Image (cartoon, rainbow, N blue to C red; front, side):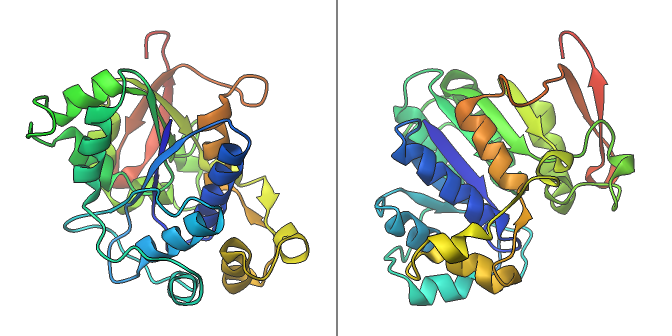
Length: 270
């Protein structure tokens, strides 16, 4: 069971990641429990997400939106998807509230959270207070219910080698990055910028999927339908299928520095 947390606006790889998640669900490999939006601002990302969910035959997947201050970027595809493709989500709940509701009802150790955007919602979840859904704090609830967290974030082994010194998802909400990475109580797997940067996908959509596919249209609007880097898609693949046989895994500790910079420290008990 997977919850996807996405900054569905600034880059089209978030749309591709959601498509990959649906394809894996179609193959019987995963159950999509919810999609959370970490991008703030006025873009109707929840409606665009619902358009993709509806296209894939899952119009009832719950969607939560970030509450309070959050990074926000304009989008070249969100409003088009929301206005042109079927969707009916008008007033989604707050992401932290939806997280707590879903986790409270889930079996212990059953949920994988894959974040492919800012860590704003996860920071909020960890710091959330007990409520009538569950008497545990957010961190205690995560520890009980979440098997692992897979994050597309950071650059490895050291973001000093990244073109901008810090990877986008980690840099845009630096406080949330520090709090989430430092405070996460279960296994965390970090899929770095350097992985998806060399995997190109998307162009095949224009020739091999129908016009009514919102994922196809998002790629067309974003970059003319050409192939694009697959940062978020590769993280979703690792979250559902695991890392064995495909990814090299290093055990250690992710040290977060100024501006969302990060460096990896190999550490047997990290």
